[in-house]
Length: 301
Image: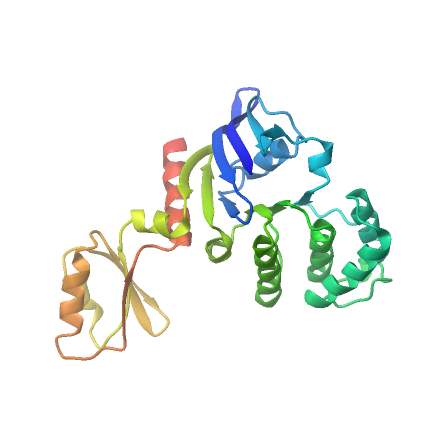
């Protein structure tokens, strides 16, 4: 188990991360979210011991992460680090051997991973011949080929199209199923919600939200309604407690000041009978993220 306790990093008078606490158990995924500059990458660098924490501790099964443990740790940095003029195979085998994997085993695993991720190219190709998306897949392979027990993924889906993002997500879920401990950052809130068992949101280095995604959403109440019904905007807006109405696809989204208003909306739109869609839910992670960022900017101004 990874335990982060009161982890803090100061750069002069600026506090980049402030008393961060979290645990990641085997087979568990922690999503780390926050706007640019919130402290996510600084947190990763402290876990990896790339930079020294001002205070606090990071332990793996109760002990400091030493060189032996580090061999079982995979890190995908936001700034990709592949050697453009080297072949895919040569550098993947190099990284695999650094983590104690036999060359012959790594060769077989590389071909399997390239097939699973639909990499367009051959192991003998140079990285510079790959598209950005395929290069990113190779970077992930370099990170996971040796079957790490602990994975740190900094913006793993950046620049990927939806199909390749789905491929990457599935492989991360497979690693989770094999018992890996995983922490990752992403600005794709739908992806965060799909992958994360728990999430932590940082704002200016401070934890503002932490817990299971669904539980966090429910904290904000079921204040969002999506409906498809033959009723005018004017009639809907006459209901007290509808804070905002917006058109979305074939229907409309209503933002409520109080979840109880949902009953009044339902009674109005169903008074003539059947309607195709009525769904009352808590706000999405994306909506919550935007609200928290906006609130933080107001308080920070």
